[in-house]
Structures are given as structure tokens and as C-alpha cells.
Image (cartoon, rainbow, N blue to C red):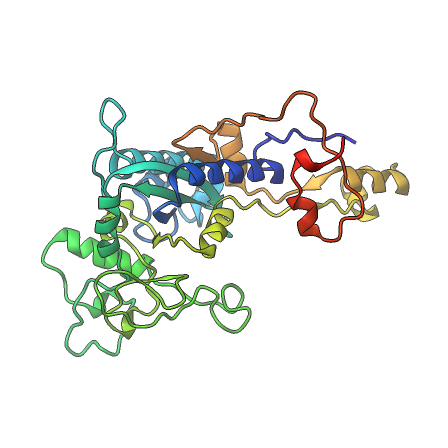
Length: 367
């Protein structure tokens, strides 16, 4: 049986190794202060201008003007554009540094360390999960800046319109505030779906959220989740965001403060979770579709046991072909085997419990 090397990107072994690297960073620096998600926008009327330019080029060269969703025909270009946009955004606005590599103040203050991981959504486009370690002074400021409010005043007589309707609010006084209001209305509202977050009957994301009039984020009574500024019930479905990040990114964002509780370890595992895998069902119909009708039943069974399947989206494949790493960290983690040469582990018999088995130190085991 052939075994793919564990350092092959995308395998469960590779993600487990990345999780251990992340845990090593947590052991050295403590838990990250901020968890943020940056999502691609290639479908809305205000999608990324790079995507609009790409579609315009396609229309001039190859495609009919009536071709719908041109971006779906260019997974390699979309993956490259998103990576360039995300990398530039992190470098210029979030993780700013001087010529000597020292952190400079960015949109979220001074960032000492970061971890970035790309992941594909159900529709096939990319989004980035980012963990940030901030300086203590910056953490205090960010706690008061993250909000889940709607930055607009309702027009008289428009109270009947839904909260996410941009025309419901008075036009702000300047272009920057107007862009932020449009971004929040168009891209920051969570929509509950029975086939997604509400399969169990209620939203597994906690929406709609309770009103929280305090301007500063505070921890809830369970100490597992932060409550952000929500002045009224109109903001119950707004995803928390940082105003400057949301306005400059141009797509959906999610900014969450990290708690030092058991939920935090779940967050680490969520950031480095492996993609779904399964066994290949190499039945007679599959062999027929692949033109391998001469294979016997034992041979098909053997192939089913040797091949691990994994759904790969076009953007996933594009990242691999372009040589773009799915995970990027600001700190390199090197594993050093500290076991003495010739040391061997022995299995101990008559162990009463699993905890005793894994709690036994190697020094106490018989050779």
C-alpha cells in the first residue's frame, strides 16, 4: 500500500501538523487576541474591481456578452487575485512593519504575530481565516472599535423597510461613511437558512443576537462569547466587524475577540481543520465510467482501500498549481526531537483506564 508523505499539503496529517505549529505559537505567545475572516466578493454589484476588470477582458477576448457568472470560468485567476489582494491588505493595512521588521500601527494597532489560512466556501470561492497577536495597548483600543451596529440614521417614514435595505437610511455626509453604510447593509447581515445554520431548528451561530447598548465589547455571562455593540433590534443579525477593515476590504468581514477559555482551543482546531475526506467507492458502475471494465471485483476492492478521496474545488486546485501555501505564519516553527538516541516506547499491560495509559511517563515504562 502506497502512503502519501505527511507533508503533502491538504492531507489530514498535514493539517494536524499545522495545528501543532499553531499550538506551539500559542504556548510561546499566549492565545491570539483577534480572529478575523476576510471573504471574497465576486458576485455582488460592488464586487472586487479586479474581478470586474477580469470579466471585461474576457468579454473583449472570448466570451459572449450574455454569458452569466464569467468569474466561474477563471478559478486560477480568481485564486491569484484573492491571494494578491489578501497579502497586500495584510502587509499594507494590518501587519505593518518598518524597514527593520518592527511592528508599526495599522488598522488594528500593532500586530506582533499572525497566522493566515485559506479555505473554500460552498460556492467555491476563497476566504481567509486570520489570527492576530496584538500588543496590549492595541487590544484595549480594538475592544472598543469592533461593533455590530448599523452606521446610519433611519429616514422618517422608512421604518417599515428591512434593516439591511440601504435606502432605509439617510445618506451620510461624506463618501467614506456612505461606503461603510452600504458595506454593512449589503455584506454584514447574517441570513439564517434551514439547510445551513438552522438545520437543528435554531441558528448554530447564535443569531439573532440580543441588544447590547454598551459601546465597548464585553464578555457574556457564560464567558464563552463576546457581546458587541448592538443599540437596537435592527442590529440583531449584523456580523461583528471593524469599521476601517470592512470599509477598505470591500467584502464580508468578521472580527471576533478571542476568549481565554475552553472555546479558544476549539477556535484553534477550527482554523486548522482538515477538509472532508472519504474512501473511494470503486464499484462496477465506477469502473465502467472510467473505462476499467477489465478489473475484477477483488482488484476494485483493493483500489478502494488504497485511495483516499477528497473534494477539491477549482480554487483549491489553482492554489496548488500556483504554489500558494494554504497556511502562512509570521513565525517559523521547527520540530526538534528531544528523545534520547535509542529510546524506545514499550506497551504496558494491565492498564485500567485510558487516562492512566496516556498519563504514564516514558521513564516509568519497562524496557
